[in-house]
Image (cartoon, rainbow, N blue to C red; front, top):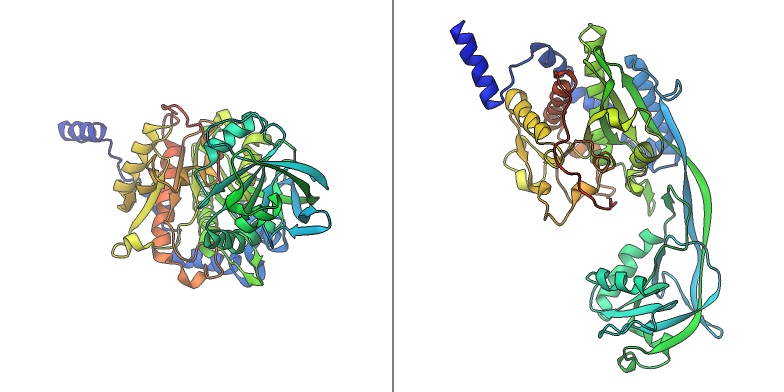
Length: 484
């Protein structure tokens, strides 16, 4: 008896977990072979890169729903596995500047970006920014900034907006920099975009130009344009908008003791589709996360079939539209949470877990964790202890640093839960040269490593779903705008 008491004391003192043989049994059903089988289908050319609203995304949604159905998971959206909603697809029509009969064409002579409504032809006033802060002339004008490279203007732009600026022209004095923007970002910005909201005229209108266009606008050499100088000309920007249907895919496993408390396990199953005639299969991003969710769901479902189901409920959700701005997860959290957010205990989000980055070339047994300690120290400690008990992976927190320039905490679907004060963990393998390229293919996936990561997520979910008390959000939530 004294020995048992001593061991229990150690467990309490050091936060260690005793190995749960039932959890270990079902974790072993998650295998590299099964992960590969799923991914070889979802990341095949037949699925055409799974772009949101396109044929391949619909095929992937059907595949995932059929898998959830085969496991016996509940269809929680009024008897359906699909949470359907409409996005607005906007494509650029005619964009140009005009002086008399001479035109400068968008995406040939300059780059344009906005989420504002179609404006048609209208006269606009330009005013060169005054570095001394005189903004009396900014109201209703397009403010022109001359700079060597993109970036570093946000504070000035915010001040100009407060002074009533209607739009912005960034003149890149470095011709190579402008050429790079035109060739690299121009085609991306010209592609049709998707959004949850309709366009509105509160959105910024941003034009990126070179010195020669600025000279043409003002009718004099660029070097002669001074702060406060003004010009007038015609600008036209037309957009073609249409609704596009898409869907999140949800499978639900009801808890045995605390069914109203819900653990949500997510991945995004969309990718970027076909670009320049090349299929972008998205094997790692985020085919790897998607099939990991499928395998974790199967492990929990097998346990439930043997009357070993979790005490809390689990929602397995693969979301659409992540590549378009975290749209699917935002629709769930902001518009139609199928299960109340106040009852959502934790979100475990899996986005890119199939590769090994250069920083870990000598040790593939790792995973990056992001956000585990942002809202709940309790969740972070649980995660650490689960890893020590079952997985022994290197948990790398490099990208969890508040000052990390990549800001990954704001760039995947977990963020829409975190902004609602729901504790999260984001599992990630790090970056690689094939990110968002046609070369992100199945043969580059490290399935044995992926299996270990998937089992870690399963064990973490098992502990969260079966512990006596729900995880508490014991830290202040972070306020930030999500990025793509």
